Image (cartoon, rainbow, N blue to C red; front, side, top):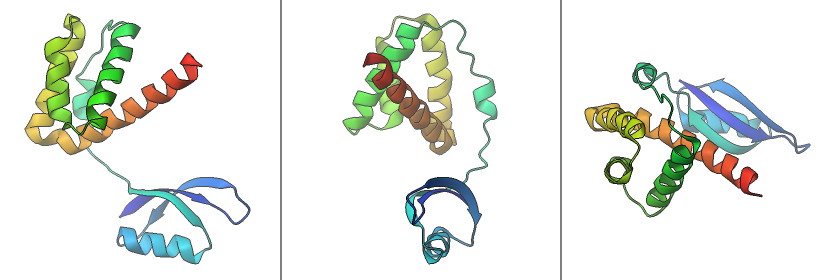
Length: 137
């Protein structure tokens, strides 16, 4: 298995990389034995992202994207499952284009592509949140 990691060296430098190991614990042990402080380590997924290529955002406005990210963030922080949060947002938005996108994403989540789709959505949400924090300053 392969794992993406972010570590801090003894000199305080932050480095990212990929390590191959039998499991996560052995990867952690190997990095610690090299004297690194582990900031994060996650299994590198080879998931099928084919469904994303079928989802076209078209001309969803920036405002709709920002509001979507804001509402999804609030619902995730409140502990709602991704599928439920997407369903609520889909039922409340007025943008027909965004509704179509959310229909496709929601279908994939419910069809079992959920784990991968959830990771993709969370990464999108993190990126949008970071962008908004910088932009609003």
